[in-house]
Image (cartoon, rainbow over all chains, first blue to last red; front, side, top):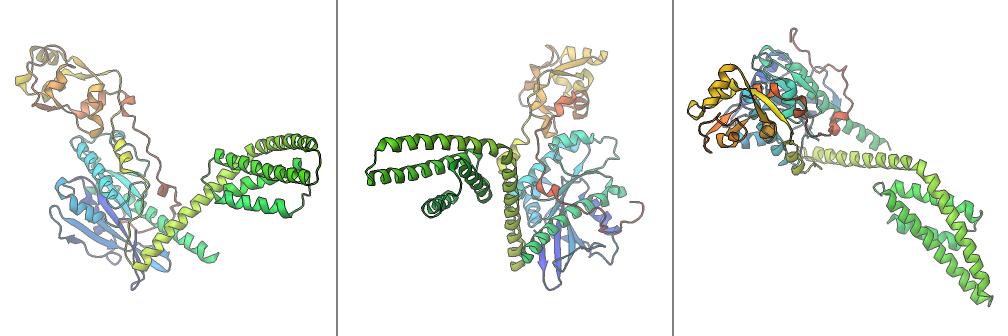
Amino acid sequence: MASINYAQKEIACKVVYYGPGMCGKTTNLLHLHRSIDAEMRGELVALATPGEKTLFFDFLPVSAANLYGFNTKFQLYTVPGQVTYNSTRRLVLRGVDGIVFVCDSQWDKLAENVESFLNLMENLSTYNHCLENVPFVIQFNKRDLPNAAPVDFINYLLKRPPVPQFEAVATEGRGVFETLECVCRYVLAGLRRHELVTATAGGS
Amino acid sequence: MATGALLCLQLARIQTLPMPFPDIVSIPIELLLYLAFLAAIEPRLKWWALALAILGLIGMRFAISSAAALALQIQQGQDLAHWFQQLESSLAVRGVALGFVIVSFLPLRGFFIEEAADLAASQAAAASQKGLEEAAKTGQAEPGVTDQPPERQDKLFEGVALPGTFSIPAQALVSCIPPEYLGTQAQELASTGADVELPLSVITAELPRGKLEFALASLKESLPGNFLADAPDDVFVDLPLDVVVSRLPKGAFVAPEWPAPDWLKLFVDSGLALFSPPSGT
C-alpha cells in the first residue's frame, strides 16, 4: 500500500520489477532513469543488498495526480533475480503497489521464468498479498533475439494471467515506457478509487 | 438477527394494527416486503434461506392467529366445529397467497440479488478505505488482505493430462542424448530424417515448468525398441523445448482458467500523460 509523507505532502507508490536473473530488469530501470527528465526524478541508487544489485530510483510523473491534496510519486525497484537471494526479493516486495514481471523470452530461460513467477506468488503471500489484488503487468523482454519463444507459449507457462502484456527490447528501449505507464495507471486508478470512496463517505 | 427483528415486527403488527385488506391481498404484499428487506439487510442469504424464512414467518403468523381464534372460541363457549371450518378456509387463503408470492418473486429475484451484490461491493470498498485511512494515520504501509488461498495458486501450475501422441525428429533426440546410451536404431532413424512418435502424456508433467528434463529410464518405454542401448535412472536429458513445442497440437496449450483480478476492472484514464518519454522510444 502506498506510503504517505505528510511533511512533503506526497504519496509514494512502490513499483517493483520482478523476474529471473539477467532477464532485463536493470536494463529497464537504467533506460527509464536515462530517459526521464532529470528534474522529475531522483538519483539512481544501488541498495546494499547481497548478490545482484538492487536498484532504486523515484520519479514524479509529469501529470502527477493530486490525491487527497497530496502529490503522487513512483518509486521503482528491481530485485536480485538469482534464486539464492530470495530474502532480498521478499524484502523489496514489502508494501508493493504495482509489479512488472519481466520475462526472458529465450527458450532456455523459460523454466527460470516459471520458477520466478511461482516465487513471486509465494513471496507476495507472505505479506498476505496475491496477484489478484496487486496491479501487475507482464513484459516479454528480449523479443529481438533469434531464440525467443512465442509469446503465446510463455503465456501458457504463466497460465495466461488476464493482465496487460507488452513485448519489449529493453536494450533499445522498446516497450519500456509502455510497460511502466500501464502499471502506473492501474496503481493510480486504485488510489483514485480510495479517494472517491473517501469523498463519498465524507459527503454523506 | 433480521429474521428475529421481523418476527417481533410481525407480532407487534398482529397485536396492534387492524387489517385493512383481506388476507389474499395483504399477505403477498407483506411477504414481498419481507423478501426485499431480508435481501437488503442480509445480502449473502441464499434463495432457499429466504424461502425458509418466509415459510417460518407464515407458520408463525398462522399459529399465533389460530391460537388466538381458538382461545376466543373457547372463552365464548362456542362450538369448535365452526372454528375448524374457519381454519380450513384460512389455510386455503394462505396457500393461494403463498403461490402468488412465489410466482411474483421469481422475476424480482435478480433485482434483489443485484441490489445485494451492490451492497456487498460497497461494504468491501468501505473496508478497504478503512485500511487506507489506518495506513494514513500510522504513516506507513500495511499489507492488504487476500481471499486467495495459496493452495489455488499451486493448482494453477498443475499439468493437464493429454491424450494422443506427437512426433519429434529422431535427429533432435539423438543430439540431446549422450552417444554411449544410443542404440543402433537411433542412428538409423536420425540419418534418414525420420520422426519418432512419443505419447503426449510423457511431457504432461514437465511442459508447464518450461523445461523437458527426463531420466533416460523414464523415456525408454516410450521410444522404439533399440533406440537406447542403455537407460540408467541417474542420467538425465533435456529434450529440445523449441522442437517439441513446435510439434505439439494447439490443444496442448490449454491452461486452467485464471479469473480476472478486481484491479483490472478499475477505470484507467488513458488520456493522462504520466511522463514524457523521449522521442524514439
